[in-house]
Image 1 (cartoon, protein in one colour):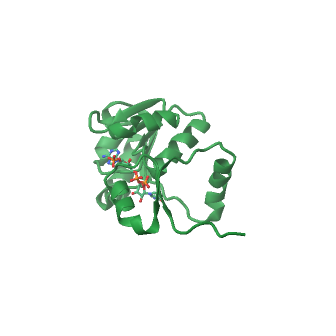
Image 2 (cartoon, rainbow, N blue to C red):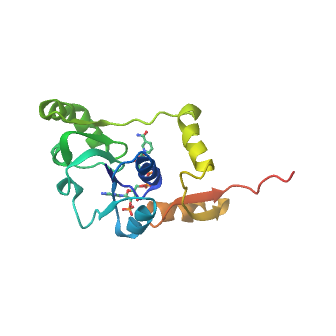
Image 3 (tube, rainbow, N blue to C red):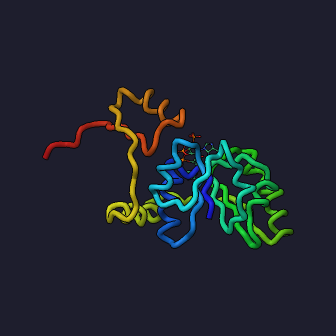
Length: 175
Ligand SMILES: NC(=O)c1ccc[n+]([C@@H]2O[C@H](COP(=O)([O-])OP(=O)(O)OC[C@H]3O[C@@H](n4cnc5c(N)ncnc54)[C@H](OP(=O)(O)O)[C@@H]3O)[C@@H](O)[C@H]2O)c1
């Protein structure tokens, strides 16, 4: 499996869940996050500014958090009967995948589509349980007070955060 954008908030969970499922994981992100991704269990890491993952495969499964490439580039990354799922990225890529992607998938016996994560406790409690049990790690980059929200958002937006950027809204209530 390859995870593109694997060093971010969603990808860091994806690496751990894929490893727990017994998959061989290739994780793609910027250079500063390669060690973090290895630490989360990635078997191989790729710096997206140096290597194009659509030419390093093929992969049986690709999950893309930051999709912006052409359908043909994603098709090239796939092994026979491989699957590509976009989770986040540009609106243009969503439209391409829903139209051309469906057709290319049918013609080449692969699957290219969108993965929509369902909301709500039923879907998130199992992950929360695994975190509480210590099976899945939440890496915290930094904790900021409420008045430092602009700096915290800038840290995340500029790609400097190596893990979750947490806003501490108030102290825990005293009992
Ligand atoms: N469909 C759904 O139900 C669903 C659910 C959850 C999340 N999402 C979406 O998934 C996306 C990711 O969310 P997130 O919270 O994980 O974001 P995030 O924490 O910002 O992580 C994105 C990661 O991608 C990296 N990146 C940026 N450009 C890249 C490129 N061209 N190639 C490879 N990696 C690249 C970023 O690194 P640098 O900044 O260092 O380059 C960053 O580490 C968002 O669009 C979010 O809306 C969708």
